[in-house]
Length: 211
Image (cartoon, rainbow, N blue to C red; front, side):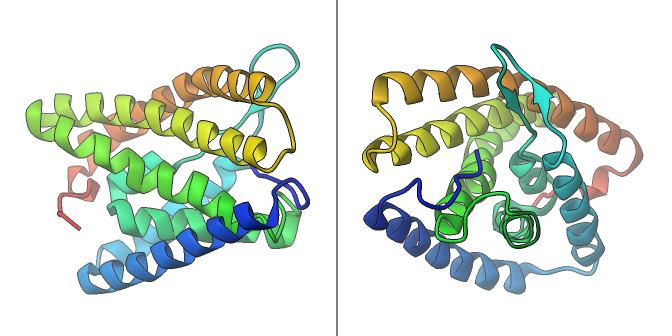
């Protein structure tokens, strides 16, 4: 889902940069305001985990592969805004050091995987957690929000490619969505497993605020 250089038209990657920079400004403001002592080491641990998880590709179908995004997990542990900052940091490091995604397309990649992956996931996770009380609600919310956020992020990526004229709608959109529906199942499973483990050993690490 990391879009390389040259794949997006200037208006599309320009819009991606605009949305991401505005989102990052808000995320920094919100995170700084609500930063707690326990959040600082957790930011580092979560960043390291997401970075490592994104570097591991696994086969999906028809010769395609996918990797875990980690945005939903970051949001569940840190909140949507701190989660988006973690994702932005990871995606930027991957771009600059490993050429995983282009520099001009970095804004779009941060928006797709960082903001849809984290903030979008939390928008789905939060009401489920409130409706279904207790740990069960947290786990159901984690599963549903992870899967939906992965699929929506892939759809956004496909739409950007289509609007840029890089590839046709009839090929790009179905392939991206179907592939990431399967990727989403894997990521939802991993996310639920990790969250369930944390609920048993350190339930205080689950984000409970409204930021």
